[in-house]
Figure 1 (cartoon, rainbow, N blue to C red):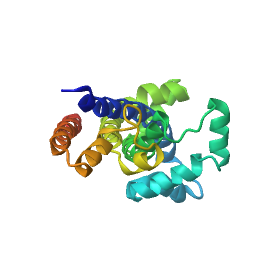
Figure 2 (figure 1 turned 30 degrees about the vertical axis):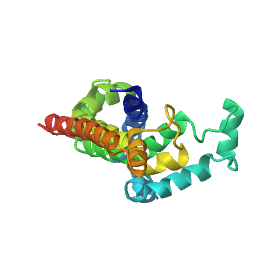
Figure 3 (figure 1 turned 180 degrees about the vertical axis):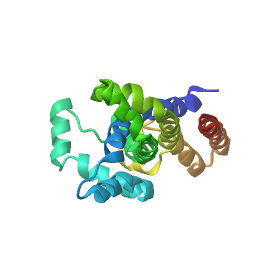
Length: 218
């Protein structure tokens, strides 16, 4: 296989891996907090967290451009810090993948934390477990199956991201051209051989991801 074939796959795996680490951390923290929190506006916040699941990718990409573009306060702040805009960079692809993958991790982690018997956590508190120890050594192990499933599904979702990435990060070979974008361009240019090879690779990786989800549930 040529470098032209492996480059988008390697890039997709790298972006998905970084995005998965980010959504894992965010999902654990927010999932744990929201699992038992009760406050006004909780439903609205959760709806916002889950919106990327149902929004068209182009809408997500459009919103990312508005939020991180040069005309926004955030975009100008990022450009001032890094001396370049974040759009059409590798990190733009990571952000797009993170946004679309986060709902899966959040929902899985929250479900796992909600399933924990509160008496177990209360008993650990009585035995002297502080907030961090309780979270790291009691809550996470008890919700581990849900967390692993969410992590794998998030990775698979980040790996297959297309619309938001194309709009926000663009199509720069070796930099932002993921496998999904490469497949689209290969079909558009009539290069069906490369399209089939990339499709086969993505099916194989996705199959393994889903197989892992089923294994962890047993």
